[in-house]
Length: 206
Image (cartoon, rainbow, N blue to C red; front, top):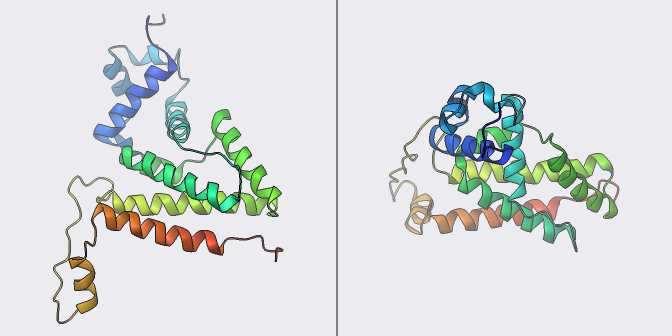
């Protein structure tokens, strides 16, 4: 019997809350049922299996990302990258999922198709259009993994090296200038993104 008040969205929100606290590896239908105060079997009225929950979390994350393929493609790709970064920083425990699970829900595929069509109009062929999208997305995931400050499975931030200023003067200067701060991470992100987007172009283009 369905539980009054439950919905697919509420199940996904509970799954997101659980993943935020304990990580993707801790997610199970049994735990998710306890999170919602129901038996695991009840959840199958709203999501067919755990894979559907994981796919739903990917779709939910992308729903919070700005994907408006309008105007010059590098400009909207830059907006997408910045918005994707913000969504991942809000839920860093989802990084392993977004890094390894392809988009497969209708809503997610619709978003991907819109971006790909816009890139084809800019001279990319179909494969190149997907290469651009996945290259930018993979770049963002890698940057945020470093920015989140921890390796999946470890709760403590990574230690900051103690540089010897005489032996490593440039590294020490960078550290003194705020290496590893939120501002440094943002500047590093923008610097690398500008270089990445400037280098992406159709193989057969000018």
